[in-house]
Amino acid sequence: MTVDDRAPARSNVSLARRAWNIRRKALQMGEVQGQGYIGQALGIADVLAASYFHAMDYRADEPEWEGRDRFLLSIGHYAIALYAVLMEAGILPEEELETYGMDDSRMPMSGMASYTPGMEITGGSLGHGLGIAVGMAMGLKRKKNPAFIYNLMSDGELGEGSTWEAAMSGAHHKLDNLICLVDFNDQQADGKSTEMLCSEPLGDKWEAFGWFTQRVNGNDLDAVVAAMDAARNSDHSGPRVIIFDTTMCKGVPFLEQREITHFVRVDADEWGKALDVLEEGKPA
Ligand SMILES: Cc1ncc(C[n+]2csc(CCOP(=O)(O)OP(=O)(O)O)c2C)c(N)n1
Ligand SMILES: [Mg+2]
Image 1 (cartoon, protein in one colour):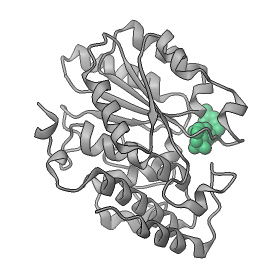
Image 2 (cartoon, helix red, strand yellow):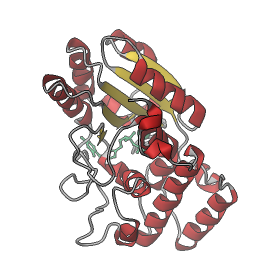
Image 3 (tube, rainbow, N blue to C red):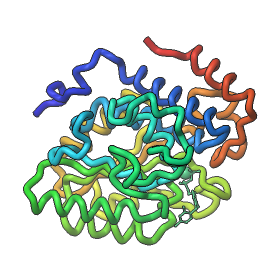
């Protein structure tokens, strides 16, 4: 199957517009609750657009289709970002946007697999996604299922020892159906990741663990797409990782400039302002 055969890719909507739509939906959900991990959603929107509208194979009307590529959100606190792309992909109905974070909603603030179609794992306890991804990738191989596993993790999770245990076993088991996406926004709960527990030189570490490694600007859609293609098509006999350098709050400059972006404080009137600023940069 080629990229062009995939249903979402047949759409005329540009990837830039998909990413913009994801940012807009995330801001709208944030406005519903007056809070949310909005900096992460704005930062990772381009990677999510390229994943769901270029790289991955899935059926929107059949989220549990056995042939689907699995997208694991290791970082449960990024749920608002995943809900936005699941709505954009037609896996979650847009009408549910207004229920974000409410009682009985299928979109709780921290992601839970049992609540939400398209949410493959409950990833809120950090450092577990990659280990689960390794197990799933091994399972697919045993079943001779050609699907890929995508695991989205954060730079904060690089400080979890379990991440490196999983990295080592992914290479040991030659999991060429495993693609790890690292959101390197150089931010975590207590400050800059490079100042909390520095993981640099990060690409060298993954390579030393036996992974096909790329590092690109995660807010440059062309670079993201090229890296996604290379990760999928490489003939490397082991797993693949793409480190994405991203900017928290990308697309809303007055939020990008905030010093603390892990949990951005947004005043009631600023949600509207953020949506207005985003509107100015709306792509075709
Ligand atoms: C095992 C574990 N330890 C601590 C937390 C609390 N926690 C939630 S988000 C977060 C920050 C992790 O870093 P990162 O994901 O890079 O943060 P961000 O980029 O979203 O600011 C922490 C420590 C957790 N969810 N799980
Ligand atoms: Mg981070």
